[in-house]
Image (cartoon, rainbow, N blue to C red; front, side, top):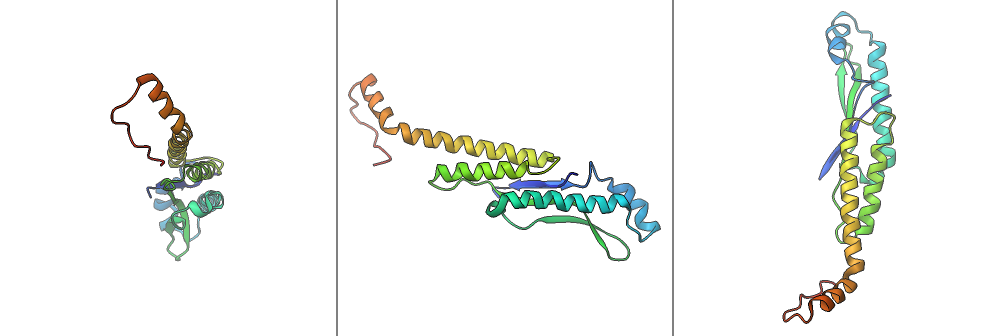
Length: 169
C-alpha cells in the first residue's frame, strides 16, 4: 500500500497517491458518471492514502507542521474518497541546540520511511532531514573542537597580532 509524502515549513510534505499511481482519470471518466458506486480501486486508494499519512504522522509527532491534508474525489452521491495526501514537516533546525536538531532530523527521517512505499516526496524529505542532521553534527563537532582548534592555530601560526574573539566566551 502506498500513501503520502512529507512537505517542508521550511516545511516539506510527506505525500501519498493511492496504490501505485491511483489511476484517477479512468476512475473519474468511467465510474463517476456512470454510477454512484465507488470502484474497488477508489476504496483501496482511500484506505491506503489514509494508512500512509497516519503512519507518517504517528512517527512525526510534534514535528508535524499541521494536520494531514487530503485530496478527495467526490462522487455524485456526495461520498468522498481520498486519492492523495500530505503532511507538512517542520525542517528548521532547533536554534542554538545542535543535539536537539539531530534528534529532530532523525525523527523526521524515520517518519519519511514509516510507510511501505515511500513516495518521491517522502524520499526528498528524508534527504533534507539527513542534511539537517549532518549540519548540526558539524556544528557540534566545531563546538567540541573549539578550544583545541584555537591552541593549534596559535602553535602553528605563532602569535597573532589581532586574535579573533572566541565566540563561546
